[in-house]
Structure formats: C-alpha cells, structure tokens
Length: 361
Image (cartoon, rainbow, N blue to C red; front, side, top):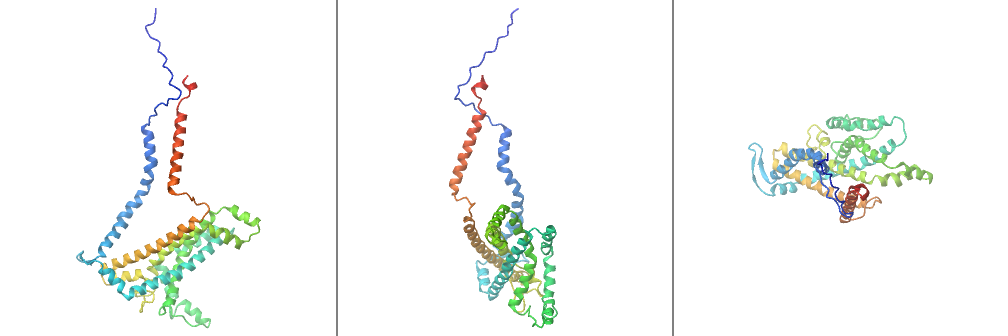
C-alpha cells in the first residue's frame, strides 16, 4: 500500500548576501516608547504642579502690575508702566535695594567661608562623624521665626545678651537697632546661623566625591594638608561652589523673615535701617493695600535676580569650560558621532540576527 502523502520539497536556500526582513513586534515598540517617554512622565508631576501653583500666579502678577488693582472688587483698569515708574521713583526703593545687597554680602561671604571650613573638618577622619554632620543641620531645621526672635532678643539695645557681655568686658554697647550697619550685621548673623549647616553638607558631599588617590599621591609627593586643600579640594569644588553661590544669591535677595521679626513693628526700622525689598513689598501690598505697585515691585526684584543669575551662569560656563574633563567638541560634532555609533550598533545587530550559511543548511 502506497502512501498518498507527498514528501515536502526542500526550499532553496536564500542567497548569502540577501538580508531577510526583520519584523518589529509590539513589545519592542512598547519598549522603545517606554525608553523615550517614561522620563518625561516621571518628571511631569513637578511641572504640572509648578504650572498650577507657580507659573499661573507669576503670570497673574504680571497682569496686575500693569493695572490699578482693586482687591475688594477683584478688578482694575490698565495704566501701563505707571506702577513701575512709581516704584523706581521712590527713594525708599533704592534704600531697600541697598540694604538688601548689604545684608546679602554680609551673610553670603562669611557663610561660604565658614561652610567650606566646617566641611573640610568633617571630611577628616574624626570620631562620631555622623553626630557632627547631623548637628550642623540643626539650625536649618529650626523655624525661621524662632531663630529671628531669639537673635533679636540677643541683639537688644538695652538688655540684649551681646550688649550685656560687651559692657561687662568694659566695651561700649552697640546700637543694634538704630545703626544701619549694626542692624545689617545682626540680621546677617541670623542668616549665617540658619544656612551655614545646609551649605556645609552640600560641600561635604562634593568633597567626599573627590577620588582619594589624589590625596595619596599628593602625600607621597610631600604636600601638606593646606597645600592639598588649595591644590586639590578647592579646584574640585568649582561646580558645587557655583551652585551654592547661585542659590545663596537668590535666597539672599529674597530675605524676609529675619528683617520682619527683628523688631516688634516689622517695618524695617524707624529710619528704614534694615528695610529690604521683600519687606517693603509686603508693606506696600498688605499695609497699603496697593497690589498693583506690589506686583510691579515683585517683578522688578525678579528681573534683578534674573540679571544676577545670568551673570552667574556666564561665570559658571567660563569656570567649567576650563576643567580638563569637559568635552570640548561642539554639539553638532557630538550628535554626529552619536548617530554614527547608533548606526554601527544597528548594523551589528542586523548582522548577528541574519542566519549564516551553516545555520541555514
């Protein structure tokens, strides 16, 4: 009995140089989409919340700054740049701007020097390092109002702890509230007490990221601790120092809590000795109920911070460009090399996925 089933014919092998078409499955497409779009989904909640709670109020404030706004009726009429002209024509604005920069310089410069010194000490091999690192952060955890109240009593003109100590030592008392420079020093001391520990931990993290082989090689060459600090530590801290300087600049120009709580009135002194821009903004908005002028003042302060931030960015680029590890190629060259590398990887993957003659046989 013969079988009626036909024997399957063997298909001719494909030419050696021919490439078989490769099908991209749905799973591979999902994986590609996941790699492309998942990072944007992860960071989208922050930008959505910022657009609702940050971007919209900023845009709304810009609109109000061009209007004579009535908060009771929640309406106003357009007056153009009159609010900006009024703010710039007030002598109090320039006094507040001078006081703001004075307090900023008196707080940021000593704060940065002290933070670098404390971070360098904590980077050494000392006992109870975790305890000391947590201790420097305690002032930052304290409420700003509590810090301002404590230090305002310490710097009291008559019964303050500082003046009492000076008089016991035979030194004259300092008019901490009536003298402009003395009040700036007192407020800067509050700022330094609160923010030095925060900047110390940031600089300490950057110091610990420096390879220890550099210090070992410097020790073998005979360099001491001071020479290692100025030759290895400080040059390696350039990007972190720039970040700390930028954040300190933004925070220093927006200082409000310390001058607000420095006395019982919270108006910046009888002669505007420690009046800052943000404190005057608060007084104009909630003291005089003129939110159009307050909005214009807020935008002027924003533009000042933006200009200083742009200057810091230029300084940042010039400093980072000098580092040896920085890629000196242009963006077009880097993109071209990345495309070439991607094409090589695709060609290698296609060549590996194509079966060889022996495998087909």
